[in-house]
Length: 215
Length: 215
Image 1: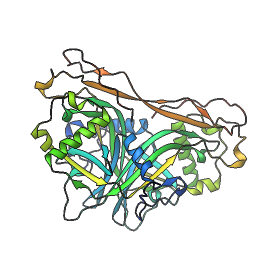
Image 2: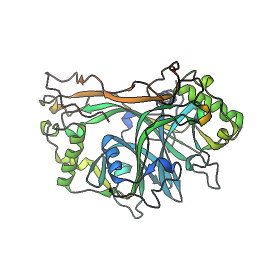
Image 3: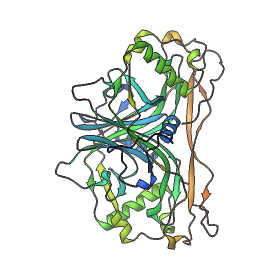
């Protein structure tokens, strides 16, 4: 049995039948998605910032310009941020407007960001991130330099307080509506990579990278 | 010239070269996406909730179970929520790790939610929402009833304080790196609808709905 991420804070209030606290499921959703939304406050005002994320073990990482709001180091009053990762999987078309829904996978995480300042660890993490996007590419690139490492802020939270919400099923209509004469079912959303667009400034043709998974 | 949504709060601090406050652009991104992320606080703790949204004129709408955190009516201390709408459009593969990026369209909105309690207006808005997802479908459905209207909370904010961030271009590498021997360019992300999955509980075949746009 997998670990539970259930806490008072991560307890799902609405639609608990679609919720779980299963760590394995949470990690799968985190790995399957490239972008998350980070919520935090500044002088009492909420800000939500979309950003790319990755994971190593029990830690959830993100990076940004070292001066950015969402990678600032610890302050006098460390804040527990809230991060949501969600994947839209399809439209659920029911017989009544109110039973329309979406199929989705979503994880909500809470934690106090921990700044990673060690140079070697930062580079190691950046490679893990790039390996998620395009395995094998890191080794082909112009190596990172000190200025780039310094200019990039890196933070993480431990994945220990979180909830999962998912829906992956046909519409659930009121029993008396199943004969209503309208098409009902699921329209899946597919995410795929389109045709690669080589940089017009590329002087010569190069081997294409290994195609990454579509997040 | 289009209206500006620029305010002290919506001013973009990081990457201002990718930012704008153009209302027409913001409305286009809002309409092109189905889901947003709403940030708000409860007793000082930030929560980020993914939800579906729609728009009419200058107003941004969402709904939820009438008891849900994110559609609660005005309290003694009305909070200005932050909402982000973002669409991932592709991976930007550069010659150095640090210049990798994503192409995207993103809008960040601020506003104090206004509860819509009028029954007729609620139904009118639910139809606008369904028309966004699948034009012409509302008229085919089993009509909404009073309990459903009551159980669904509806709120809106005026679109007047917001910022747009976008990236839609090839990698921008350091000048001396353009000859580095690695493929560089953009891998576009395509969102399409997969094969419709008719509800197994559907007793007879029905005409398929008009395919909605892929959000």
